[in-house]
Image 1 (tube, helix red, strand yellow):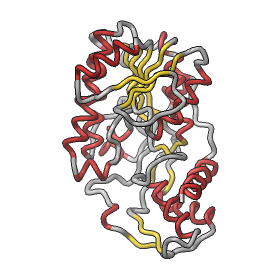
Image 2 (spheres, helix red, strand yellow; image 1 turned 60 degrees about the vertical axis):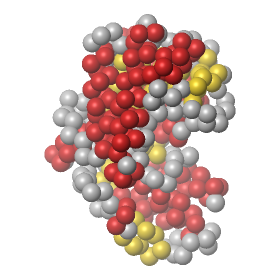
Image 3 (cartoon, helix red, strand yellow; image 1 turned 30 degrees about the vertical axis):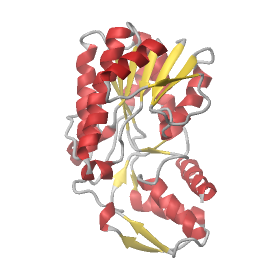
Image 4 (cartoon, one colour; image 1 turned 45 degrees about the vertical axis):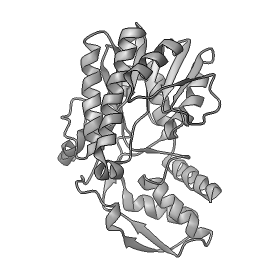
Length: 314
């Protein structure tokens, strides 16, 4: 691949993916699509407004990509509950506009969609590891918007789009915003350790189990899919999961131990979801078989890196 366009390049995953792409495709031009956000380390930058189909078409014409990695999304579940319309506009309509521009204007370019394991939603109530054929039963506006986009891209694959749909489970790492559970814990722990917050941790539901990955493993999955694109069927779907769920309360305890603090734990109603599932668990065997992908980053290393990131920030 000579030219790879990445949306969401200024975001959490985008920053990590740039390095992974650089290592895997050293001869490729890496192109960041932005709405004016500051990005560094990319070979080219093109303007792109996902809510404007004309902007999507122009960006594809300028970038002339061999592959498009579509990361851009409104991804905070809590915000999707409070303001669902922008979530639907960006995640569904923006994805459709971009994918159609690629299908029509970029010929055989690969379109890799960063979907989400959130699309399975209430199917997780089975308490078994879900494979890619599990029913989509999204339980929040973010998940519903991603499920709709996932289905739309799958349909476009029937009309010539060389689509790959990736469904990563929860992932974290340095640079993630504190709207997500692990950095939310790490930020508070770092503040308490620095004496800049009273020794009280405000948390949501701790008796939940989540299938977590390091962001580096997710980026490795995206790279592996691009490398395998020539032999994949259009519309192929892959879970990226560890297959080993972790209790949220245990994650909190581990971060507090790493930070060396023992605060009081207080429940915060604002951090609870109106609809939730007890456990998420994914079956990653399809990605292992087709892409040769497996998570390799130790979880303790992931937590330490997130805590170190927040310690530096404050």
